[in-house]
Picture 1 (cartoon, protein in one colour):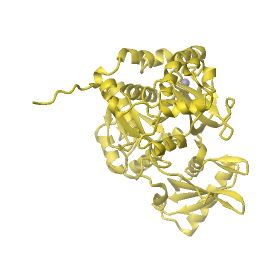
Picture 2 (cartoon, helix red, strand yellow):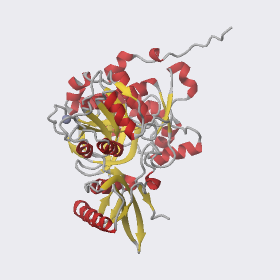
Picture 3 (tube, protein in one colour):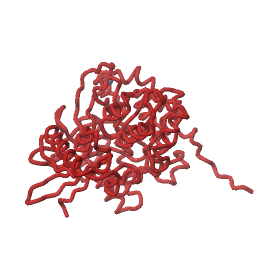
Length: 470
Ligand SMILES: [Zn+2]
């Protein structure tokens, strides 16, 4: 006899109509909630708040933190103003929770054994640029809303049903590649082309597949997308004539740099992380990234004091994810830095708040003579010199009680005494002009920085080391 165990089928595990009513997918979203005035968006946020907070309260992680802040009855927190008084937490708090109660900590909200009641669960991790990747459990609802939110960003970027979209994120335990895959397949009718990163499908083969399979969309981190464009050109490919590529969805920087390398092919940025999924995306007006305020509550706070900042000031993004039924995310201080660009209605018709591209991580920010400097910004400046490759690495150290930053860059061609001197002078000058502070520049030969950046080896390249504490 074969044992008779009921299986919690995926397709039976949630109320799908409720899901798309609460979190509209593309294209419905762009005709409805995307166009609502700010007051109506606030009503939507408020209506979802209580359930979100009560779920968080059911975990030891949140309950103990909130109780320590004097909160005894979570049902009394019903307004956006009250929600703002809840304490924030940072990634180190999650790491501590995992260390105290391995392997998943006390914040997951669900456990493997719950599948029989709530349906299948997935486990994925962060990209792991800083420290050990953190595991996160996802319910069907979290997975589906998460991929739907990403699909909205892809829709804005121009991906349409029937498009073959090449996914260059490294398929591993990392959440990123899978949520991209699910967004394309489940919520857009696109055909995911699962090349993964360069370590799985080398860059030359990526370009061959792009050409042969008539790929029209491309997804990836900025740095790898730039490398791919350069590879294609080295292969003698005319990016606009020989390929079918129409649109690129970028992550991790400034999409205008990607557009430039891809000879003007449309590239739009989006922003997310594995605990929340995509939270913001650029619209075709290219005037900032719209926040998905129907699914999240946002606050931008001062990096040091944690106080809310006025619009326009750069600070750390604090987020509450309203849709989560697995790992709750309430007042998570992401340490990703950005600023509000505008709350005015955009030319695209949306009044959803627009934020700037990420400036870098608050924990990699170095304060040099009163100026905030991020490794990512230094790398972007260096890329303006055509002789410099896409690779860079920064470190901060302290000499004679003075903090300083050194930018290590790599040349495309092996260096000579002359080229080393010229590039060093040119990049040093550009850094001084653009960042208003002086930064040391060290010039390396092609391939020499990989041992620092782990580019192509880890899912996201490393860009910074703080040597001041050693
Ligand atoms: Zn817009």
